[in-house]
Amino acid sequence: MKVKVVGSGSMWNEHNSASYLIDDNIIVDMPNGMCKYLFRQNKDPRDYKNILITHFHGDHFFDIPFYMLLKSKSENKNINIYCSRNGKRKIVNLIKLAFPNSFKDVLKETNSAFCFDDKFNIEDYKIERYLVNHGRMKPAYGYVIEKDNMKIGFTGDTGLCNNVYYISSICDYLFCDCMFINGTQKHMGINHLEELSQKYPNCKFIVSHMENDTRELLKEKRIGNVIVPEDGDIINII
Ligand SMILES: [Zn+2]
Ligand SMILES: [Zn+2]
Image (cartoon, rainbow, N blue to C red):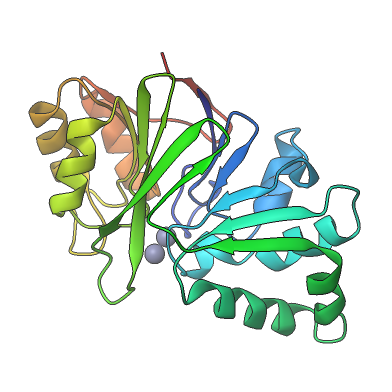
C-alpha cells in the first residue's frame, strides 16, 4: 500500500487538516478545503469514490458538499461513504446549507451509497473500525485497513484509549493524532507517542493533526519509530 498524507496539520495553521489518500483509491476524511488540497497535490477528487469518515467535526467532513457537487458534474458519479449511522443526515444537511437551490440535484445526480458497518471490504482491502475517545464527539472511529498481509491504522481524533493501544498492537503503520505537546482527553500528544512507540516498537507511527509547536518539538526529539510527515508526503507501506 501507498499512503499520501494529504494533510498533517491542526485547524489552526498553514498546514492542511488531517486527511489521507490510500493507493489512489480510498480517502480518509474530507476536511474543509480537501478538494483544493488534492488539486494542489496534482490529484483530482473526481477520480475517487471511496471515502472513510472518522467523525463529524468540520475539519473532517466539511468539503463533502464541494466533492459531491463536483462528482455530480463528472462522468464517474459513484460515491461510497463509510461513516457512523447518524452521518448521512449530517452530510445531507450540510449539502443543503452549502447549495440550498441545487442540493436535491446534487443528491439525485450522484450515485451515493452509505455504509454504516463495523467491518467491510473495499475490493481487496479488509477494513474494520474501532471506537476511540474524542470527548463529547460520539461516535468517533479509528480504522484498520488490511491488504497484502500489511495492516495500517488511522486513529482519527482521539485521546489515548484502549482501542488506540489495541490498534497500535496489531498495525504495521499507524497514522495518528498528535495534536499537542501534552495530550488531553480528546487529542493525543508527544507524551503519548513516546509511550506508544516504546511499547510497540514494531509499529511505525506517522503523526498528524499537529499544532506547529508540536511539529517542531517532534522533529527535534527524533523518536525512533515516529515519522513526522509534511503535507503531500507519500508513505510506502512495506
Ligand atoms: Zn475532532
Ligand atoms: Zn480534527
